[in-house]
Amino acid sequence: MTEDMKPVALDNLMNFNCSSKNECFNECCRDLNQALTPYDILRLKNNLGLSSSDFLKTYTSLHYGPESGLPVIEFKPNPGTGHECPFVTEKGCRVYEDRPGSCRMYPLARAIARSRQTGEITQYFALIEEPHCRGFDKNAGQTVKEWLKGQDVDEYNEQNDKLMELISLKNQVLPGKLEGAGSDKFYLALYDIDEFRKQIIEDSLLKEFNVPGDILKKIEKDDEALLDIGIKWVKYMLFGIKITFGE
Ligand code: SF4
Ligand code: SF4
Image 1 (cartoon, rainbow, N blue to C red):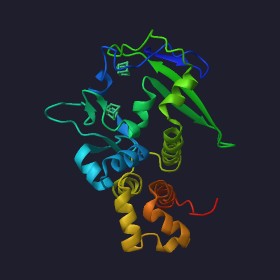
Image 2 (cartoon, rainbow, N blue to C red):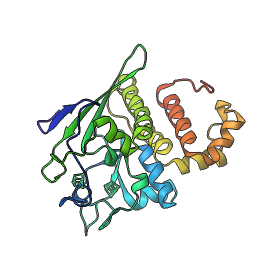
Image 3 (tube, rainbow, N blue to C red):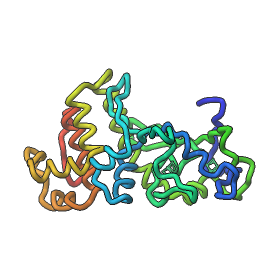
Image 4 (spheres, rainbow, N blue to C red):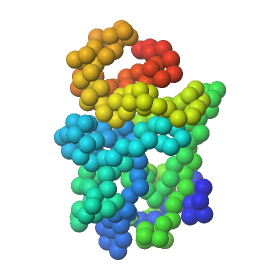
């Protein structure tokens, strides 16, 4: 935790208010250094009516974690606007309903610890005070918990925690740098999910797993169900964890 981060508990008052009337309005969207999660991409590409491949190609850049070798997706810098978010407008966020989880959390940071015995997750929060953000010391009368509820962030956290579990599994089972085919599978199933769906339907990618017909039918239309299958497939292909259904 850096010195700009102040640990807070869910029942603490936020002492923070973000408003279009703040002189810093949109400043937090103009210098991004933000990784997008699979669920962020799912929501954004659907908001924009794009396939995952088109969304990734148009708006993002891909690099690989130097130590993990895992794919990392970020907004693509633009020669004209640098690291400004492609969706920021004078009036605010153009994809507000489907903005990424990190945009919802800001200026809070969230970390989790998962019990190895029970799988239970404990959450920790901290406020990040950055000089550009002038929302501090403007009491909106909300606790951290109330503020988070207003950001509608629970579904994002739940989905993103599945990614964290996968990364932690990778670090335990395959420490070191993941190369080539492993990284490609991770990218396909988690980030380029419409291409993953196409390969399931047209190339019978999952034929060896006896996926029940109702699940195959569901993933034709349901991106979240598809992402869940993608996580199972990656767990099998990279770590040998058997794919089961109905648990
Ligand atoms: S997605 Fe919206 S809230 Fe997030 S950085 Fe871009 S404009 Fe800002
Ligand atoms: S910089 Fe802070 S207060 Fe200003 S718009 Fe962004 S989050 Fe809100």
